[in-house]
Image (cartoon, rainbow, N blue to C red):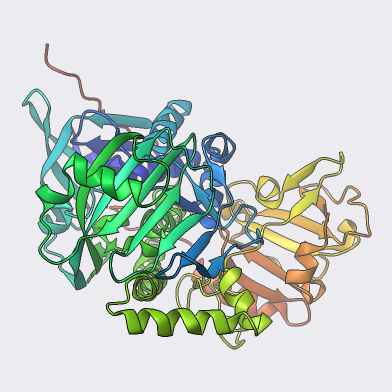
Length: 554
C-alpha cells in the first residue's frame, strides 16, 4: 500500500471498546480498518454491567434502542451482613443522562450488536483473524505489520492507531508503556449461569469475611456469582463442579442451573503511565484495569472511545488542529482513576478481613439510615465520581470546581419537538457540536452572540430550549426549537437564560458563553479552535482517504 494513502485510523482489538470506537468513527464519517486476532467476537459472558453514560455513547452511535432490548434495566444492590441481613441498599432512581444508572447485559450480545452495527457503513474494513505483530511510528504516521489467519503477512499504513487490545495489550508492550497500581492478592471464582430459578432482580453482595461474594442478575434468566478464594484453595479445587454446586446451593435455588462458565480471575487496579505515545492511543483495559466491585471496567473503556472518537474525526477531516488529540491524555486518566478508587473502596466494604471489621462497617451503614441526606448519598449512588474534567479541550468559566458547568457532561432531559413528539435531547443535538440557548422566544434566542468564525467549520448545530410553559414555535432558519418537557433542564441549569452552552460531540460542555460578556469567551474559543493549518502528515480538509483492501489467498 502506498504510504501516501494511509488509512485514517487503524483500530487494534474488536472487543466492545474497539467495536464502539469503530461505530463512532463511522458515525462521524471516518474510514477505519479494524484488526482482531480472534476469528469472531467474544462468545462467553464477561462484562455484565453498563451505566447511563455508556448507553448515551451507544445512543450517539445509533445503537442504544437496540441495546436496550437486550438488557435488564435499572437494577440496584443489596449489601448483606454476616447473617445475610440487609445493612445497605443502592437503588438509584435518577436518569440525569437519559438512561438508568445501572443496567445488566450480556457481552456476547453487545459485541454482536456492535459488529452488526458496522454493516450500516461503507467505511469500515473489519478483519477478524488478523494479528498485529509489529508497530513502528514516525512523524507522518504509523506502520503496522499484520499476520492473517492463513499466515499471510502484509503492511498497513495509518495516520493514527487505537490500541483496544485488552489488559495484556501487545500494542502497549510494543509501545513500551508500563502500568502502575496494584494486583489483588486474593483470587476470585466467576460462575455464569443460564436458566436461573432466582427471580430477585437486585444484586446481592455478601460482605462476609468467611466467603465474600456477589450474586448478580442478568437478562434472559442469566445470573453471575463471584466468590473470593480462601487461603489454601487452588484453581483446580474451586472449579471442580461438585465444589461449584455446593457454593450455588448455599446461595440460592440455582444448584442445578446450567453452568456456562466457571473461571478463576485475578483482579487488578492498574493504569498505564501514558495513554498516548506518538500517533498511538491506549483505550479500555489496555489503558486501565479496574476491580469489578463497581462494575466500571467496560464503562470506563466506553468513555475512552467517546472521548477520542470525535477528536480523531475532527483532526483527520481537517476541522480541528492536531493539538486537540493531546486532550485525551489530559482528560481521561483522572476520572478513570477516580472510578478505580471507588471500586477499591467498595471492595473494602465487601471484603472485611475480620468479623469485628465486618460488624463495625455494617453497623456504620445502618446508622446512616437515620440521616436522610447521608442515606440518599448511598442509595442514589451519589458516591460515584461525576463525569467531569479539571483540564482539557474546553474554555474554563472561572467558577469553582463544584460550581462550574464546563468540562462536565450535559444533562439529557426529555424535550418536546415542534410536531409534539417526545425525544431525548441528544436526538435533537445530532452527532456534532451544538450551541444551546434557553429562551422562551426562539426568534431571539441567539441575539447578541458574537460572530464565531469557526462555527461553520465545526458544523455547530444551534438549538433553542424553551421552558416547559412555552411552546417551541419555529425559530430562524437553522435553529431547532424544543420544549423542556418536564422542567429538568431548567432545574439543572437555573441560570441558563443568562448564557449559551457550547457542547462537544461527546456531550461535555466546552464553554459557557455569558450573554453580558460573550466576547471574552468567544475569543478564547477562537484561539482554542484556531484553524487547523495542519502539518503535511495530516489529511487536508476534503481529502478522500482510501482504505486498503485485503483479500485472503485462495
